[in-house]
Length: 303
Image (cartoon, rainbow, N blue to C red; front, top):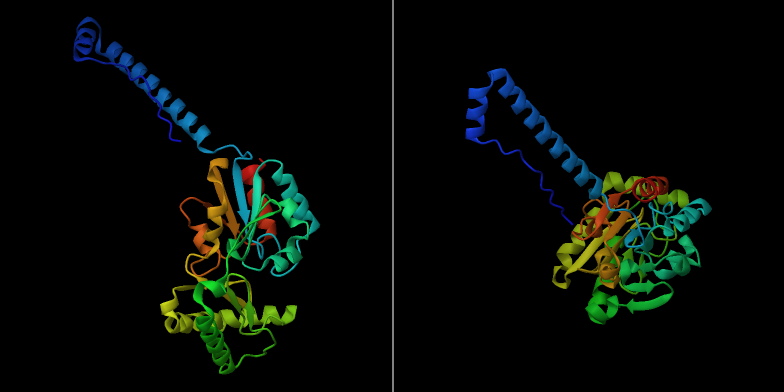
């Protein structure tokens, strides 16, 4: 909340000046004015210092920090380290924490641990289309029901036809993964090995494989009002507009929190963290790695 500070300003009237100048020397009057000016400046400095001291809200359980998974809590598609897991539990002693990822709930638990529901206040899989508060399932939405089976099959058939016409250094299997609230599309195939995944990411950055495919799909399926979100190293998500990571915010009881923070690595426009990162009710933080996440959280909440 904004705080107003009233600083008493010395009242210097014309009559006072006239009396001073008549009864005293010019030098004495100037000294009086200098004294008043110094007091006025000091008062403003004290007020500014008080305002600065209150501008940063202390970290408490009324602060909620939401975390992306890949590139934020873990390296892409790898498991959380014991050090990061311990850090999050230490952080949870001070603030409330939650996780919001694009992967389905099974993959999310594979990365951050089968006991994840007990380690986070909120667990949001598929951008919050599968939502847990503590260990209770509170919401679940379906992509297939949203757009209908006929449109879903048109979408899948178009993707398979498009991928059959492009040549990459390598292709593997599982080009489309059907999830509860979205389709995940991977030009190389999700079955690729770690080194193949890294190689495709580099190739994609130079050749815009995913960006070009997204552009073509946006034109072809404009009538479905879909969002296409590039995330991770090898794939992109397709889901109804509004079903990005901001979707999870509707399940956060804002009466319990003064601040909501989000930490993610794909915060650029078109990245799957962009919408929640720029949401007006969220304080967004862009990170470069899990270590960067720990450093930023330490500076914000533990120091």
